[in-house]
Amino acid sequence: EVQLLESGGGFIQPGGSLKLSCAASGFSFSSYAMSWVRQAPGKGLEWIATISDSGSDTYYADSVRGRFTISRDNSRNTLYLQMKSLRAEDTAVYYCANGGGYWGQGTLVTVSS
Amino acid sequence: SYELTQPSSVSVSPGQTARITCSGDVLPKKYLRWFQQKPGQAPVLMIYSENERPSGIPERFSGSSSGTTVTLTISGAQVEDEADYYCYSAADNNWVFGGGTKLTVL
Image (cartoon, rainbow over the protein chains, first blue to last red):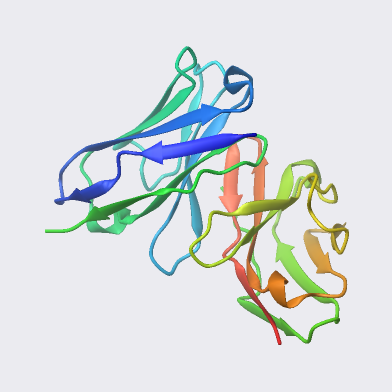
């Protein structure tokens, strides 16, 4: 069974940093591109970053480019999202998703003073 | 980047056919997916590659396309199909979601 388990969310002040993790199991992690998608309260889904299966290529939405970094450790079957210079508008549930269409349950990030 | 446009809401009675459209300037059908999201839950993949269903997805869900519009069809919608639906395209290093459609079945 495919499982994706996000962690690392929480309450953070504007300008702060946070690192999210996504532990994967039940599939060949190193064979799939992985993505982070977020959903602000009451809003739609927003793609924010994708990393290739090997980790050599990364892609970002304009809204997070230069502030967020996606990475992966294939030896640990884990995906990461390092978030810096956080803003109130980054408040959202953050989901990791694999290239096969499976999603985790999400982790909530709240940016507020 | 480009945009995918969906109607904000669609309403049908139980047993009727629901159609949700997704329009874009460029829609590579091979990479087009539909997700269902119920309140408080993660999205679930319903359709991929325009008209393929993952295992476990009921046959009443299907996809089709015409020109630059793709359509999710729910034949004989059930009350449990009430949810938000999102189209999604991942092609040419360009990933984008439609704005989502709230399907009401009552």
